[in-house]
Image 1: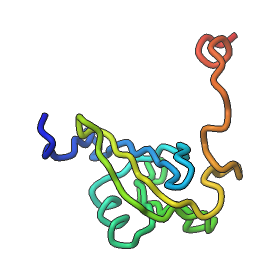
Image 2: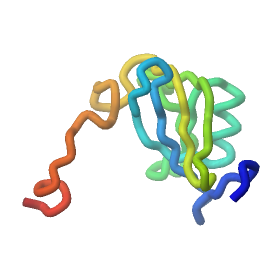
Image 3: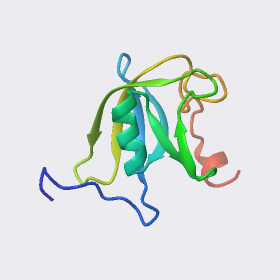
Length: 114
């Protein structure tokens, strides 16, 4: 694929978007975006996703105040996922943790159910 390849959305019109803290480099969360949420993110400067469970646009932090301020968006080499670099305002995870990736993976428990 060329450097100029257009984004490859899935059959539902979505693309996975990993969010990274612009200051620390820490991975904060994974969300899904569609064309409308990407356009709105650029227009407002506030990271907006597509909520698969609610089937609607979801501006991160609209109710909690824990917003993500856009710094940049990058596409991967295959143009099938995004890296959203942002400045978080408060914790990113709904649990109150700074990142959604605060739990370490355990092979036996998490993959094999032991």
